Length: 404
Image (cartoon, rainbow, N blue to C red; front, top):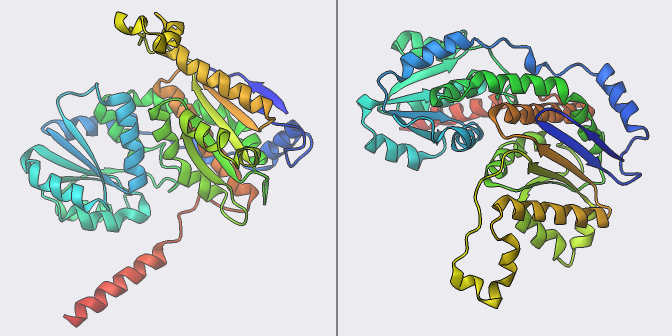
């Protein structure tokens, strides 16, 4: 199968050898599943942008330092977006991203950030509220809470007179479209409405591609032992890493594939030059990400002394050209290698890397994970069953307290 779907922002091309898809007519099966399965509900919520903007302005009025506290995967995603889109937008404040498990960082910040100049924004999903609140009261800063209007966070905010932003209960695994992500983005000066439009556009335009990707992995088992995302820059390396756990959860079970992210050099070393490379590449689905947007503008400029040396003769091929040309040559070489080996691959070309396009990409991952789960009888729209574990933790704490 080889097909290409053009979109404003993201373009997907499937290069799949005959007989790899577990179903016969792929487009017919995609259409059938699109009609028989429910539409993933991620775009249904109405986001209160005006209230978010007003709250954010009041929140940041006197703050010099803003500490975001949440679970590791939430913090990792937010910090990735901050480094990619906001590090140069806001110069008046410093932002810190703290996982609740990073006690060393929290201890260091609590000793060095002036309490009167610092606010701590707590970003819990529903089942994380109690644990994050427990940590909150060990910190010296003013706390700002987000949470459901009918939960422990709202009750704490009322009784302790803390700043509180009420939000609807979202989906635990698909929290990226909602206040937990939008409030930090607003505080940095990122155009959140463009991001939201990108998400909604992706939910609408990339549904069939998400179904095709889910079909490629099969219902119960797949010939692919690994799904390898290949990227050409550090930002996408981090962004895709943030979604590995979600995709792995959507394929859990017997013979579940491994999801990995690699750059071109790692790919060459592991697959192309390894003794087991030939066997490994044919059991791997490669998803190649490439930015076809604006040029970086960085050009090669070599000192005259190096230009006269025969050892650096090949650099003359890049004389006065942009660094992007070198990256494009790497991508073209990789494509040629995979085609020559008849390896299964999917090309994901981003026509731009603005925040709206990233929203489309996240929408693709949301729907892909959702359809992966549905084809395996998994429900990722429900909260994970960790209440029993938390009950055991509290029971242990009570026993230890009675022994004192």
